Amino acid sequence: MFAQDPHLPHDPLAAVTHAAPHDYYRRLAEGPPLRFDAGLDCWVASGTGVKAVLAHPDCRVRPPDQPVPEHLIGTPCGTIFAELVRMNDGARHAAPKRVLMQLLAGIDLVRLHDETARLARDHLPGSAAELNELMFDVPLYAVAQMLGFAAADRPQIACWTRDFVAALSAQADQAVVARAQVAVMGLQDTFSALHPGDRPALRANLIGLLVQTCEATAGLLGNKMLALREDNPEPVPAIHNTRRYAACDFELGGMAIRQGQMILVLLASAGLGFGHGAHRCPGQAVAQTIVAAILSSWTSALQQLTLDWQYRPLPNARIPVFAAGATA
Image 1 (spheres, rainbow, N blue to C red):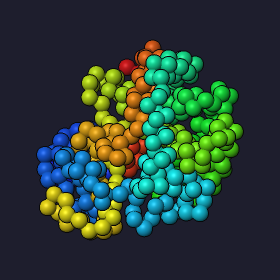
Image 2: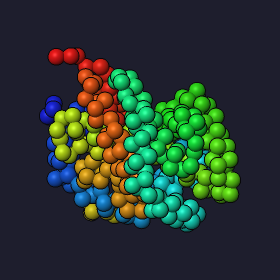
Image 3: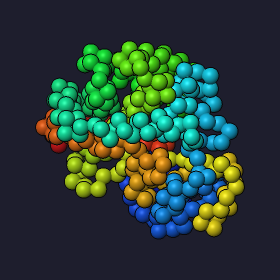
Image 4: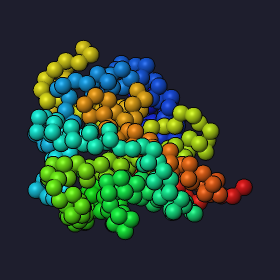
């Protein structure tokens, strides 16, 4: 798509780490809402097609024949993944989803902001290397605190969560997956000790809150920092795309979608960084509150840093990685 223009990404996945993808997404949004990309061997939804796909009942979060990623089947990570309401469709996940939504709706956002601001002031980045770690860890500390964990437990919880998230990638090697199994068992034991009466499905989804926080909130925080640094009122969203899989043959927008085909849904082309429909991120207000609190606490520290940046080589999330910049 638009390969003739060297200033634009060569495909939707390259756009995630491109320096300036706005024009690319705008052009896609102005084109057909659904098109087949032969290079990626999948359908691509952009613009108005994004909501249409996310709202369609036959567009599922996972392939119909693979509810759990193949490399996690039969592992503790796979057991948790199978319970996550954001990664599964169907009646079995309805009850834990309701409980999770009620929990998030009951969060005192003013209190969360104040507690997160204190956490952030206790963890000020003094270098690019520290910033790269703290933009992941401080949001995780905030959610762990929100869930009731003591300060002494939060660093370990953050470490375990990051190990678990690393294993979700299809490219994760055996060593990464092995660390994740240890991490998941540690998270399960810690949650069980704090909330002994919780059912396994709810416990898995509380762990899922940490998992969702990890990359998504780090990306939201990082992109907000860059937007402020560049005086840009419209920061690039953290999550650029997601995927849906056809549960059966159906027609959408005049296109014939076949069972099992993947649809790459370009959230960034529709301004829907938190998704839409049944799997819209339920923690949007929590994430935005955490990021606002951290930014307000880090303003002075960030002004002291001279930074360069590029983007982590991820297919979905746009997360900056910082390096010390050259001084003027």
